Image (cartoon, rainbow, N blue to C red; front, side, top):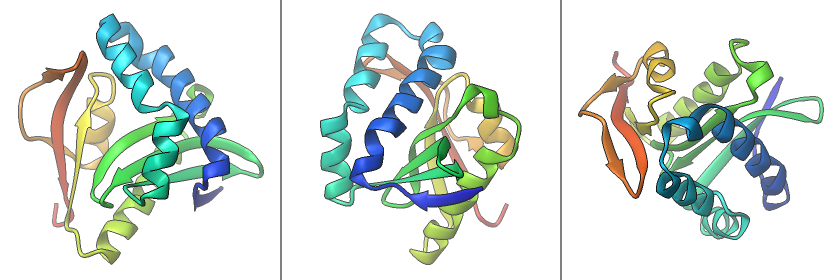
Length: 153
């Protein structure tokens, strides 16, 4: 498995993967407003602007040419997107992607990683060492629990 930072030309495939996994695991827990908000966020033009401005860094896990999963961060220390293909769950791909985030955060001097976890992913983040820092909230229809990972833990 190879993990590399995605380029603009990788975004359509990556956002297709995100959309597929979102609708399989996340959307059933969301109201229509939340689904619309999420789909607007992952729209290709929006992603391209954020990647071009270096606001968002997206890494993909590949097996040969097949994209298995992605992780995206803002400012190298806040996870914005984290999705692995359904058939690739529980194979260590998410953990490997998270390790790439840890390496980048460390290189930038960050000891803390944050995420606003969806209800589905809270246990996954817990297995990676994250802890809830507040109760579940909803913004623009998106349900999330603020969580934090401290490198010293």
